[in-house]
Length: 524
Image 1 (cartoon, rainbow, N blue to C red):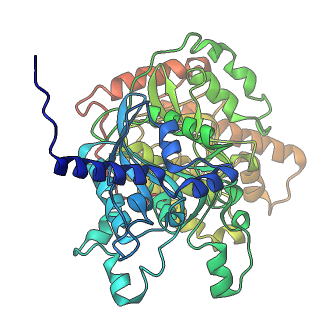
Image 2 (cartoon, helix red, strand yellow; image 1 turned 180 degrees about the vertical axis):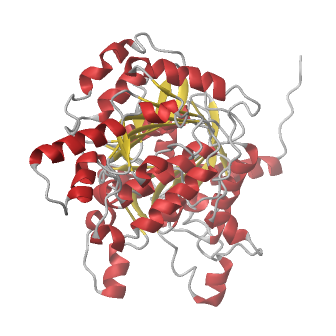
């Protein structure tokens, strides 16, 4: 019979102290602060991690952290940031959750070191990083004074840069789940994907600071609510109805992403019924050449069922950017949307496409462009938004893309926009057109008026000249000179994409990008 040894009394005291400290950390800001968080309709940081991560997978780091300001040790469990490793659908991720019950999750020296350490660890080890934001900016008075300010830099020659910059190695996601000022906003600006919960707000400084410093009275919603960032700034890539919807969106997004940039996105089983709608794809394209239609209906025919995942759907609505699967392979779709402005791309749309190309090229997602664009939206307002510079930024980004690029001309493609949509000479691995395509410098009807507007021509002559220009815009002349690769039956579009992906992801680099856009700014 084994004789059980009793631990020395000193060890018991040490273990009891350890347990007391860990129990205190698990209490976060205490029952009153937890109740207040629940009264606002929000989960606590630990509850959020429990909902997002696979059961029992969270491994915490920095649980015993606290403020380094004397006297604040017991008031700052985990120093307001709960962080570590966990799994989402079986894959390891790094997670950081702001604990609003502890001093409104304000940023401090210790918490900052923890966040930077975990963010760097994700990049170094090849794990996606998920940041759950709800915080009130920098902690006062910790950051005041010369020593307070300078100490937030981390103490090294480049430690602040490590926290506030990013060369993309692994996917990074930020969720805006409450009032997010300061650090959560910076993290969102560094992230590849931002989902904002309705009722949450994001800005550099909160309304209270603005009122005191600038005498501006403004609500959280007016300053940085979901409509501001989903529709106007483009900072939010998706909007969640509530926190559970937010976790669902994060899990779905990560399902399209590789864990790191040195691997291809995960393959998925091909759902039953994939491709069945291709026989009807022309039913969604109007016979009248200038009539608007919903490009999304065509995309749903091409992609696997229920696989379209729009990015920034409420911003720059004249162009669609969406993750998708085609025959189980992840593909990024860039498609003009005639429902909005006839598909003419504005500066918001340009920024949206650049951001999407950066995402896809960094994480080895092939790009499929579908043209139906009359050109860029021009005019005085566009010039004030530097449309020319943005068009060239777009071209410069496109030139750096090294994932497979497939370009399909559905209907019109005019002027400079033809090349921005990956036309001839713009690096397309496959460039094809539907027989409905029109390729020219501008709309033939407008061109006829420009060329012959100063001449005395009757309506019949104008009609004849317009018809001649329409015939010249047919894709067959370009196909005949090998300026495009083929003219295809629209009903074969999905098959053509599948064949191209098999070819271009099976070459020497196996579809892995050169990652030239990995350090392009994430938020235009």
